[in-house]
Figure (cartoon, rainbow, N blue to C red):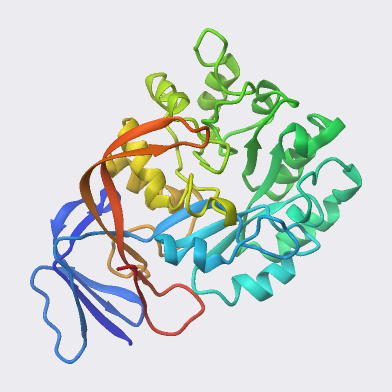
Length: 378
């Protein structure tokens, strides 16, 4: 299938000036050829929609899609195209000694487009206390793998949590920061339980480093006891540090998120932290996460931008993240419907949602298959 004409949809992409515009899209050889009114093309497949919303393919920057020996790694396409994301990032499941296995057996074979945040620990998340032994960190190995695979490795990943670093405290995070500085990539930091403290970690971070799990409800969070943002959070934001949702099994608290919005700590990115144990609850999909964020105060337009063009621009992902002629034809197509349902965050807090996104189709041409993949969720 080299051509596909999509008719009857409503385009949504703030970057491209589309706000539910009723337009057709002609795809040819995996590229958006024409966006316009009443397009006609004889002898090709037509996808007829009934007012569904067409957005650029969603980009989820926090998943665990390398199985290897990791207890949490999961098949990439289960986390990607089958849940509404045409592109996903693996958030540190692989390290320098198993990255090539990840690349050869996952990245180069799956349909979903996969980028990597490389763990500084030799074998990534083969164990879940990967930074408790500093001997597992070899700077030269990390530098070599990054420099040989810059087309795919987009960030350095460390986890700042007591169960991960053991007695090493802040030291592995500082090592990760130095490595990230040398390779000129963002450092993505999982913010978890003390030690190290959130304040210490934030003080290490520079412009364009990323804090993921920003809105958890643990004691080692971003707020003071009096409910105001910590000074280190305010200063980090001023420096240009980015904040990501990273919902996960234990890392998103809707009450904290609402409080953050009131303090203007709006997420720069929206991600899931999807892996096998949270694929139904409490995460499910990136659409489910967006449902919760809309109920808490973000707009649909803001949410879509934070999983499409904002991500593509930040990580310099060429040809994706926009609805634009000449761009790769990666599309997430969904309905947004009224509802009256109760959902839960990672800490069993309940939240009523009045609208929800329901996945219709994923049109994807950027993976390892030939032609156009049209995945129908219905």
